[in-house]
Amino acid sequence: MNEEKDILILAIESSCDETAAAVVRNGREILSNIIYSQIDLHTLYGGVVPEIASRKHIEKINQVIEKALAEAGVSLRDIDAVGVTYGPGLVGALLVGVAEAKAIAYAAGKPLVGVHHIEGHIAANFIEHKELEPPFLCLVVSGGHTHLVRVRDYGKFDILGRTRDDAAGEAFDKVARAIGLGYPGGPKIDKVAKEGNPNAIQFPRARVEDAPYDFSFSGVKSAVLNYINGCRMKGETFSQADVAASFQKAVTDVLVGNAMHAVEEFGVDKFAIAGGVAANSALRQAMAQACEDRGIKFYYPSPIYCTDNAAMIGVAAYYEYRNGTRHGWDLNAVPNLKLGER
Ligand code: KG4
Ligand code: ZN
Image (cartoon, rainbow, N blue to C red; front, side):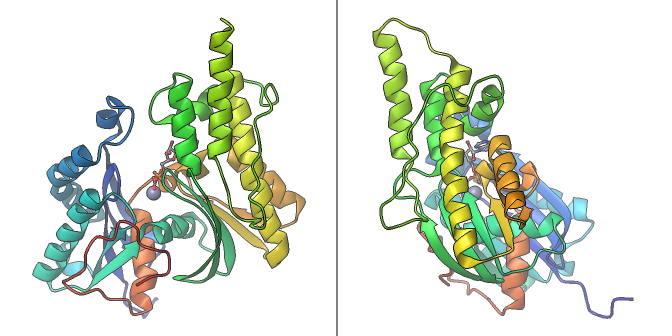
């Protein structure tokens, strides 16, 4: 029998367009994971409208939390701490989750643990891979971030590289819009690309000089726009599937290339991916192959834990809680919070 008392975290995530709450036991076991996605609402506008996102969070957050507690079969009394994403993200959206978490923690007399959103994405890998422990390297690719991170220990990170311009997911979303696929672009490109030829068009693979782990995606995005404008000017049609597949291949090649360079340089034997773009089937396949070729272990979360959710925030909050992180009643939303900052 386990002598140690279970640690239960109620986690809240509202940094972008998902209103989410979860209950996590001992950092690795998800008792509930409730996500109210606003995607349909924002699709009308071709992207996330911050004000609408905040208003929807306010409307949904109590229901989502109630459901998370009910599904886990626990009450606030059973909870050991309340974890919440306090940055980075949309300030109005973050404020809803932070204010809610503070109110609940204060009323229930529980500690408050603020979590960095990217730390949450990385922690998503702990849910389904019970054996995974730091140190490892992780590529975080989402709508707002593209970071190559060395996870030294729980809650201890070195950022090896990051994007200089667009995030990978942002490039997917912009290219999808340009070729008429709509929002959100990533999953749509992923699907259409399966019908296309990834070698049909040679889009550029950008390297950042003297920064082998940094990324730049604005060039490939512009190249796609130029290509379709060129076709239109010549009165030619283009293949949506070929453009999607070729663009996806260009982005994937760079992500895999830089990541494997770091893997070799740092001599790690474990590599993980995280964030919304980590759900991309071509990226998962290419990374799996690259890791296999080098004889290292490859980890990736199920798609539901790649895109924004509160389960991953609960996992990160558990390790922060164990490390002694506690936030005061003055916790605020920090839209540009840096990874590793307290
Ligand atoms: O992690 P996430 O839900 O939110 C942020 O923290 O940004 O990531 C959302 C991003 C969007 O840009 C979306 O287009 C992208 O992840 N995405 C994908 C796929 N699923 C979601 N990109 C490529 N392929 C996918 N299957
Ligand atoms: Zn995210």
